[in-house]
Each structure stands twice: as structure tokens, then as C-alpha cells.
Image (cartoon, rainbow, N blue to C red; front, top):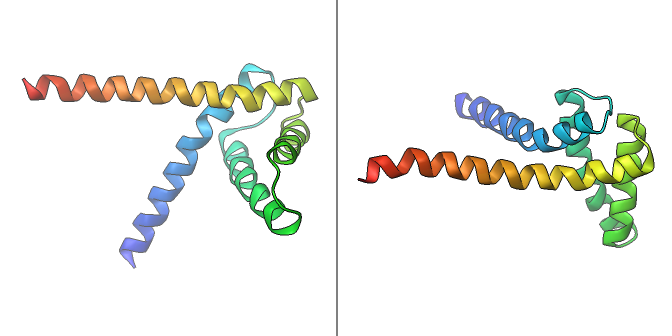
Amino acid sequence: MALTIINFIVLLIIYLLSSIPLWLAVKVLGGEGGLLKVTLINVLSGIIPFILAITIGETAFLVLIVTILVYKFVFHLGILRAFFAWLLQYVFAFILIILIGLIGIGIVLPKLF
């Protein structure tokens, strides 16, 4: 039972951390949404391609359009800003991965020598 609770907490933390790039993108572009709302939409954005693949066969362009429309309506952005939020979340994710990697290297290197 305790392991199940720990697994749930770890999964929740992973979802929250994976939502930070989208949250940053929405904030930069002037959209409305807190971290919890962004996390829920991030989960929804993962479910949408699955549903589209089952029902009509997934096409990347269709998933992109649906995701942008979800961002538009949920975060109160225009179409262009929703597209940039979609794009910026990956830019911010890349930057965060690099920073975390550099911090990890900075922590590990002194211990190696």
C-alpha cells in the first residue's frame, strides 16, 4: 500500500515537472492558466492523439491542429499565440533539459576528481 502511494506521488511530481515548459510558454504569451490547469491540459494533450489514433487513424497534422485549438480555448490565446505556446513548450523543455544536465555535470564532476 505504501509503495502505491509513493508511486502515485512520484507520478504526480513527474506530471507537474513535465508541465513546467507549457506553463512557461503560456505565461510568456499572456495566456491564463495555473500549473494545475496546465498539468491537466498536458495530460489531455497526451490522451487526444491516442483517441484520434483509435477512431480515425492518427495524422500528425490533425493532432497539431487539435492541440492548438485546445490551447486556444483553455488558455484564452489566439490561434497564432496557441501555436507559439505549442512551439515554445518544446524550446523551454530543451533549455530545461540542458540546464538540468549542466547542473548534474556540475554536481558529479567534482566528486569524480
